[in-house]
Every structure is written in structure tokens, then in C-alpha cells.
Image 1 (tube, rainbow, N blue to C red):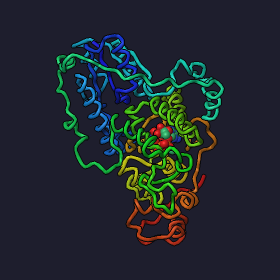
Image 2: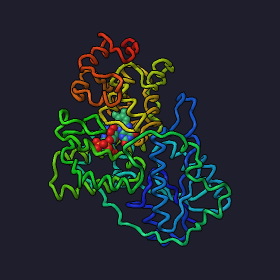
Image 3: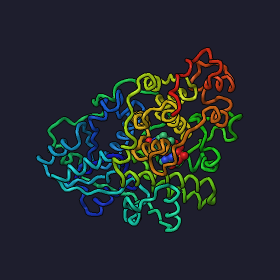
Image 4: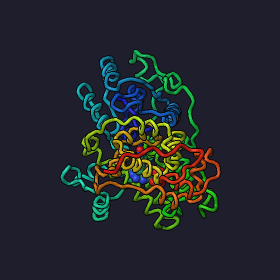
Amino acid sequence: MNLVWLRNDLRLHDHPIFQYLVAQGECPGMAVVFILPQHWQQPTTEYPGLTRLGLAKARFLRACLIDVQRSLYQQNIRLSLLGGDPVSLLRDWYAQQPFHLHTSAAQAPEEEHWLNAIADFAPVSTYDTQTLFSPQQLAELLSTENWPDSYSAFGRWLDKHGLPVAAPLPPTILSADPLEAPLKAAVQWPDHQLHQVPFWAGRVPATTFHGGEDAGLRHLAAYLGRENAIRHYRDTRNQLCTAPLSQADNPYAGSRFASQLSPWLAWGALSVRKVWADIVHWESLHGASEHSSWLKKELLWREYFHWTLRLKGSALFRNPAPQPFADTRWQAWCEARTGYPVIDAGLRELIHTGFSSNRMRQWLASFFIHELKLDWRLGARFFEQHLIDADVASNWGNWAYIAGCGQDPRGGRCFNLNKQLERYDPHLTHLQQWLPELGSVTLSQVQQHQSSGPTLPLWPAPLPLPAAT
Ligand SMILES: Cc1cc2nc3c(=O)[nH]c(=O)nc-3n(C[C@H](O)[C@H](O)[C@H](O)COP(=O)(O)OP(=O)(O)OC[C@H]3O[C@@H](n4cnc5c(N)ncnc54)[C@H](O)[C@@H]3O)c2cc1C
């Protein structure tokens, strides 16, 4: 039996595993499973109070699963949803009904550990489902000595070699036999329904993102087509607001400031090769521009972080040594009450929607590391809990970059919040969207509040910051 284990490749388009099984005529004997790791829902002692699935993130994942389940069902295939430890579940399953496992290649060390453990008792084939390039294309670089130590060096290497991004695979028809997939007979534990998995219950925050392949494909088509917002990407990508800004802030008011494709890319509901191909198609219609080139450049950042993690593994997380756990500062951060309005607004947005702009992520990480002086890994784990686009490589890679201990270490990136506010939110549009209780305050009042001047009456005073070292 062929068992397809979906993880962060929750789609049917451009999917090498399904493509392969169809080509081999193996679809009729195929079962498809998604396993929600039990520990994702449980707080760890290493990172106090944090889980791996905040509410917004859980909701996005749930929508992705419902969508892929529906698409498979339309092709007579049942997606089985299990919860628990992936290795133990698959071991028990294998004991009852041996299978050949087909799954995406590991990106993070945790996934590598799972796949290695499973390979001890079952045949495993892995596929590249998440990247623009294949390991064969990057073979020359894929050793710790040869891997470029900065994104710029990676970009130069790509320019020199002119690697083509493979076209997305053509659509596959999975024509399987009727719904009673072999899995049903083999599994002893109850078939988990989405609503029975405990974390799905409870209040979920509002977000403008809807998970799933179908929503992702529609979002991509609208971004490049009806909205045509790529036409100003380079000019607007640094804005803060997920909601449209007012005309005063933005000549493109009402138009999407960046692609906001990351949540679908992170869960594999959109294939990055499909995104790339559609941008190239847009260029063939409208002409390549600084905007379309810049968007592709950002996708190459994603690629760079992905392969860096694949190559360096857990070594990325060990640097520097952990700091002692600082309670007051951490608590204030978690409650979005640091007393720095810019930061508290960003944290509220992140916690409520599961998303924040790239600029805001940089401010938050810079503040956490360089002002609060907390261990960057704790901040990265906080993001991982909340972000609907949480992606181990991009998240930890960016945090390490800002901390100055990842790739391209140049002492870290530290942002001056008052200057940044003046530049990116001069009319306080974002700030007041997320902190409405501030009332009508001026930019200068907020700046003074954030720099030991008179404090705002309706917001807590800034936390005392540790002395600079
Ligand atoms: C501290 C920090 C943590 C981050 N954590 C994540 C994360 O968990 N998951 C994630 O996908 N991105 C992460 N990013 C990168 C970036 O902020 C988001 O990809 C981007 O804001 C998503 O919005 P967008 O799709 O509109 O991006 P766009 O500006 O439209 O970019 C298009 C795509 O390029 C990729 N991309 C853009 N910027 C980056 C970048 N700096 N690094 C890697 N890929 C990039 C993303 O896939 C994105 O969807 C993080 C950045 C910082 C500073």
C-alpha cells in the first residue's frame, strides 16, 4: 500500500507525490493522512506558556485541511486526520498493514527526526514540494563549506548560473477506487473528525485570511489579475497595514501593499513554483518591472532560508547560549502591554490576526532582542505560535538575522522605533487601528511617551529597559 503523509504540502496542484503515484498507476491503492502532532498543542517547559498552535494559526490550518479533504473526496479519496505522535502512530499502523510512505522532504530538524525514525521500520520516499529549486540544481552549494554565508552571495551565485525554476506540474486526476481506502480497515483508533480535535474548539480571532488551496489560488489570481497590486509592490511592500490605509498615507489606498501570499506558501496550500510561474506570466503580459523583480527576490529570500535550515539543522537554534528567563518583560510582551504603543499595537495585531507586515515583524524582533534583551529564540517561538504563515526556516532565519547570529552576521539589526514610526506610520493609522483606546494623540506625543518624555494618559508607561551592554 502507498501511504501519502501530507504535512506542509496541503494542496493537489503541482504536487510531485500525487503526480508520481498517478504516473506509476498506483493511485487505487493509496491512502492519504495528515497527523496533528500532539505536542503542538501542549505548552513546553523550555518555552514557558507557549504552544505551537495559536488560535489564528489553528484556524488557518483547519481551513487548509477542510479544503484538501474536500478536494480529495471529490476524487474518491479519503483524507484521514490523526492526532498524536507521528512516529508511534505510523509504527502501529505499519504493524497492521505495511506501507510505502511518500512524503515531503524534511525542512526542520523535528521533521528529519520523524523521517529517520520511520525509515527504521518502513520504506520512505521523499519529494521536494516546498522550494523553487531542487537539491540537484543546488548540488554544488549544498555542503556546509560551500553554502553562501549571505543572501547576497546566494543571489550572485543564482545570477551567475541562471538556474531555471521548473514549471509547475500539470494537473493530476487521481482516479482512485471508491472511498473505502485501505486505511479505514487498517486503523484501530477512531478516525478523528476535525471538530473532535480539542484545539479547534473555542473562540477564534478575526482574520482576513482564509486557509486552503482554493482560497490561496483565488488570492494569487486576484493579486496578479483583478487587483493587479503587484504593479506597485516595491513602493508599498514596507507598509504596515493589513487593512487599507487612508488616501493621506498612500496613493494606492485600498490596494494590497504586499502579496500576503505567505500563509498559503507556509502550509503548502500554494506551490511556490506556481507563484513564480504566475509572476513570470504577469511579466509576459505587462512587462517585467522593478516591482515584479523585487517580488521574485523576496521569494528567493524564502528559498535561501529554506536551504540554510535544511543544511545547518539544529545548529541554527543553538547560538547564542540561552539567557535566564526574565519574567516581567516576557509577561508584558505576551500581554501586549510593554508600554511602547508601537510594539503593543504590533503584538495585538499579531495575536488577533496571526499576521503582521514584514516591517512590523522587524520592529518587534528588534525590540525584543535589542531593547528588552530577551533570548531571540523565545521571540521566535512566540511568533511560531501565532503566525498563520509560521515557517521554521523563514521565521528562525529572520530572527537569527536580526539577532546577528544567523547567516550574514553583522552584529544584528536594531531599529529606532520613533524614527520608524515617523517614516512608516506618520498619521498613526496603524497605531490607532490596534490601540483605539489611545484616543486622538499626535505623533510627537507618542514619540515622547516612547522616549522618557511626558507619558500618554491612556497607556501604561514604558517598561524600564535593561541597561545597554
Ligand atoms: C522576525 C521575522 C519573522 C518572520 N517569520 C516568517 C515566517 O514565519 N514565515 C514567513 O513566511 N515569513 C516570515 N518572515 C518574512 C516576512 O516577514 C514574511 O514572509 C512577509 O511579511 C509575508 O508577507 P507577504 O506574503 O505579503 O510578503 P511579500 O512581501 O509579498 O513577499 C512575497 C513572499 O516572499 C517571501 N518573503 C518575503 N520576505 C521574506 C523574508 N524576509 N524572509 C523569507 N521569506 C520572505 C514570503 O514567502 C512572502 O510571501 C519573517 C520576518 C521577520 C522579520
